[in-house]
Amino acid sequence: MAESLRSPRQGWWLIGASFLLAFLISAIPLPEWISSFRPDWVALVLIYWCVALPDRVGPVVGMIVGLMMDVLQFTLLGHHSIGKSILGYLANRFHLQIRNMPLWQQSLGVMALIAVDVALVTWIHGILGTRSPSLGHWWPVVIGALFWPWVFLVLRDLRRRARVK
Image (cartoon, rainbow, N blue to C red):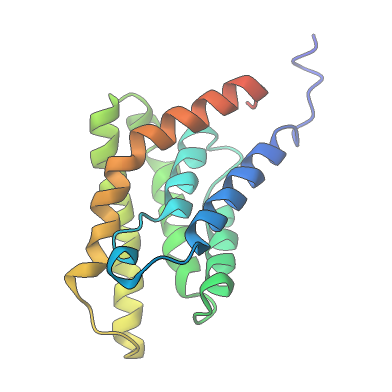
């Protein structure tokens, strides 16, 4: 009975806090030589919540998070929101397949999803002529896949402890 009385908004604090932490970690200044190896923490958190709660987190949240990344990184508005909204859509679309894979296969799926996001952002940079594409853009794809099991396990544990459904 108590489960049916839950508010549909219950648990948004955990989702918001995890995105806030991802933004904070992404904003930490790093030396130039290591910053290209920084995983896209926001994308990893977005993928997790899209897979875990596809009815609550999806492309619209991805668009909002992408706009917030644009503001955080002082880039053209809409630049990251296109990639993150498509990332949210694809993660929602394939959430059942990703959920039923072992963690090492999930990492490969996450790598493919982040690669789509990076490809879109790189493509937009190419159209705008702001930055020439380099292989350094692709390191966050590999590093993000390596960090996925830990992100998944930590967020799943937090979600279960907070009973977010």
